[in-house]
Image: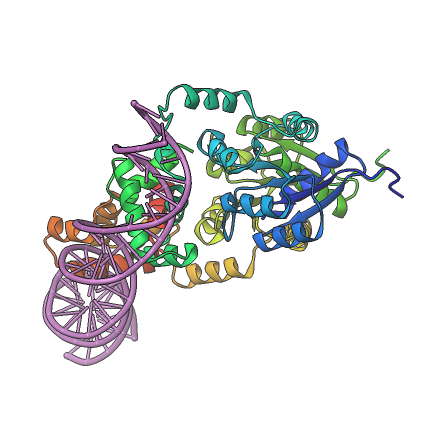
Length: 212
Length: 212
DNA sequence: ATGATTTGTAGAACATATTCTACAGCGGTT
DNA sequence: AACCGCTGTAGAATATGTTCTACAAATCAT
């Protein structure tokens, strides 16, 4: 069976429906692809240790955190792996960050099937995929450092902390989740508030709602 | 073809992958079902006007708003329609509200395939599906005659405190504004959280946003 | 290439928030 | 009239969060 060995995909998303949907799409394009799935960080890493993967399709948010730092771990295990971020979050907010962290494509979950197929083809043939929108952003951010929206002022870690804050996590929980001291969390909180010119959680939640 | 006319499903979600994934699942259970899809409010309504639907599988959040008031519109068009909410949001926070609005099932996107199938079967055979968790909630709210609008649970002073909290006021500021001791503010905060079954400010803000 | 800034991290002292308990007044029930 | 739960209020002990300072590593700007 399977006379021509073909590509291996790993779909990482905490929602099984999404994995199924992506799976289907892939099969339409690469009919004898090998498709693996993972629903958590542990599963992703475990799979990467066992199988060489051509393309990792990676959601941003998992129950156990965001996948930013997973990228480097994945690359450490498989330097040649291609990573396509597939997220429901606004690309304007996250794409640059993730591309910078080592992903080579960013696709919004709000895409239609055609875009999705293009993204998959793009990743497989040229190793990358980004929308015009993001290309423009890259250009802009190259030309002038003017942030398009206030959240871009935040560093990766700051965004991470901010996202936990708006989920309702307290400093203690955050410090445990990220394994940093509580005073560190406070420092981040302060810097976030300062950068965004706000001074309370309610405003932070407001801002994130506005810009995503 | 299709000798035995069977069920018609409408999958409403702004992410096409999700629609595909759900589609797949449905086909496994109801192999000759008719499956329609919609990615926006307009599409949902348009479809409802053209086709009688047995089960509407409905996401909560769409680019053009949340689907709460879409439920009554759907029921207006097709009083017999069954609606299963399929959402990534915490069921504890939203399920009752949507059930009350006319949905008869609530399924979290974090479910596995088996749960999803159970939900689909539940909806088709008995017209409803809810998790034990939500059953408990309903029971509680029945026994204690909790009004659906949680804000009605709060006493005048509690609402006053809650409003200040969601404006971003800290306990100190509230205690100064209302001329009560800070420990009193904490007591109120606790009672508010308890009455609304939440435990952090982010959820309070969420709730207040939903109810306005 | 080098100095300036940002980023990620904490310790210690201090400020704020929560918990647990309590109690009096009010309104409804028996 | 006596009881009950809900409301508005706190004190004290405890838990959590903030500030201020600091420092190394990374990144940026010149």
